[in-house]
Length: 337
Image (cartoon, rainbow, N blue to C red; front, side):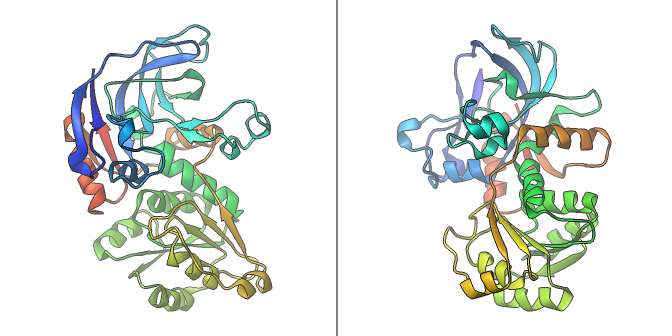
């Protein structure tokens, strides 16, 4: 089978289409004919050599978390799916035995990691991590859900938002930001989002963003948000200086949920403002399989329409990563092997 392998950790030019043996299913495993695999900044960080997970000793490496397709074969002990089922993969990898795996939430597992291998014609996966798709949900649509929309859904859950709350989303035009806006709209929340691109903000307003602010300077953004309202929650996938900005802007008792570090892995905050304002900073990673199932149901009911920027063939995987690296997209980029 053909795979889009990372053969050098140098950015998009490190992607090479190579041949690998077709996989066979082991116990509790399934083989998926991959019809779609969305890419994420997580994949790009690996490709750029900016991940502690993968180094040159692991090459060639096949990334790709967000896998959807048709079950081709199953191994011994598999009962949840059968050949011919259309499925999407929950990319969570957990130990299955700790307290969090038994009682939830599973993404708190101390051994938590992520599946890789979707940028290929076939993928071998744990069968119990597959969500069967209803007939009305296309695999090419479902592939957009796992990383960005699971992450956004879980952030909103952890922010403990209520209808009529206002949420602030800096860097709103990335995959997680777009998902936050769409899901917040479904929940009846008011949204404030920022971007350096007026054209991208126009697209987000069409998706339901209530207040669009153009700019990236935290001081400028602080004044602009304060002129609108005081947010009840901040959904922060950027980290860096936007963490201090989020704490400053939060209402008394407000919550900021952080899931990423695109703008930096270090932040400074005012500690007195944190405790005197009864504010909370909450870490969040991905989501749960149950949440992915809920997202599939939202798509089935046509309540949610995942935003997809473009589709690429397997041979165009490097181009997809170039588009992401250049921040040219709004919504998801999906490879269709």
